Structure formats: structure tokens, C-alpha cells
Length: 117
Image (cartoon, rainbow, N blue to C red; front, top):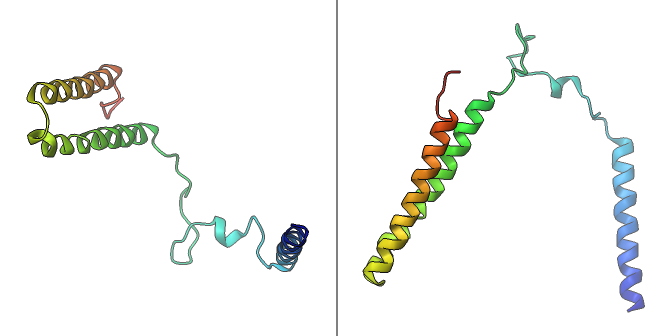
């Protein structure tokens, strides 16, 4: 047990030493001018390269992903149709579709699906 702890501490010390030496001798800095500037064929940009990201576009993309995943959850129901009791199958299917439609209706009423504000 002692040799295992000794080996682990030696490995940890060597790793920390290498990280410190690498950070000290590295030529790169955290705020490198070339890394923070946009790439436009070597020319300075004519406008701001850091345009604000549209939050509305992000919300619509998230809603699309949520509904896309929920639709993919419907596909195994088609395959399991012949193995399950039809009454239970339709109850599960209708419940799932009602949850999807209530979510869609809620997003529609909140105005998240309208592109223009």
C-alpha cells in the first residue's frame, strides 16, 4: 500500500512539474491578438466581429430539438405496437401526443414561435 501511494505521489509531482514548466516556457499568452481577432483573409474587419447572438433564434432551436427528440421517442411505439395490448398502446400514444400538443400550444401562446417581435 505504501509503494502504491509513493508511486502515485511521484506521478502527481512529475505531472505538476511538467505543467508548471510548460506554462512558464510557453510562447502563447491568454490574450493573444491573433487568436482574438476574426479571420478575414488577413485584413482588419470593417465592422464588429462579435455581433450579439439572437436569443430568439436560440430559443426556437431549443424548442425544435425538444420536439425533435420527442418525435423520435414515438418511433419505438410503432415497432412495439404488435407486441402490446392495443388499449394500453393507444392510451400511452394519446397521452404522449397530448403532452406534445399542450407543450406546443403553450410555446405558441407565449409567443416563442413568432419570429418577429
